[in-house]
Amino acid sequence: MRVPRHPLWLLSGFWFCVVVAIAAVLRRLGELIRPSHGKPSQMAAIDATFSSHAVLTGMHIIPAAVFVVLAAAVLLRRTVSDSLERLFFLCGAITGATAYAMSVYPIGGWVERSAVLIFNTWFLCSLASAYWFHLRGEAARKREWGSRAVAVLLGIATTRPVIGIFFATGARTHLGPSQFFGIAFWIGFSINAVVIELWLHSKRRAYAVP
Image 1 (spheres, rainbow, N blue to C red):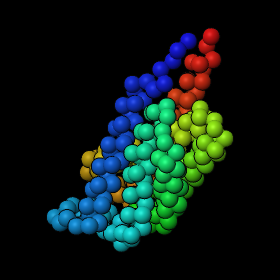
Image 2 (image 1 turned 120 degrees about the vertical axis):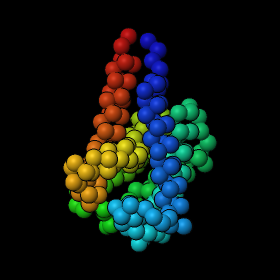
Image 3 (image 1 turned 60 degrees about the vertical axis):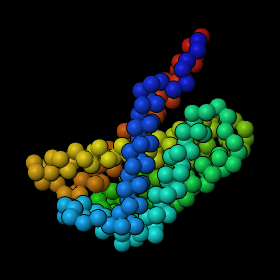
């Protein structure tokens, strides 16, 4: 039985997250280089938090953007050059390492920090597993664990619509960024982690059907 490698719904979600992630990186870099004025007080406070550790923020989001772009080549193409794969793993490792450092400055307090620590650790474990299978020449297992790593990292993109919902409903919930950022992180990362596991499980079952 021949099974499509990537169903349309999964590809749509992947590209949506990629676009959102790249847009978020470009906006953040723009704010770091030339801060805008006249923003709502809550947005200004968030931007000020990132600007207070601008170098670390740049060291985190630039490799993350490269990792996201390379993910399309590494996961969606059957063959990719060794140099691109090495850059993929290197940028992923830098992104994970700097995420730990970024967790020192959480907008959402310990709730956000706990989400970052748990999901970032899973991201690095998945990336390390993918690299191990890459060294062993096991392409299928490398792609499986690489998919997990990419899905977790793109969870930060899934948090953006969730954060938008919290901002839009703030007048009713009376929740500020310091209160809902952590919740949004848990929701965004959990959605991606669960979706990729369900897809990998369904894929294994589909290929097991004679």
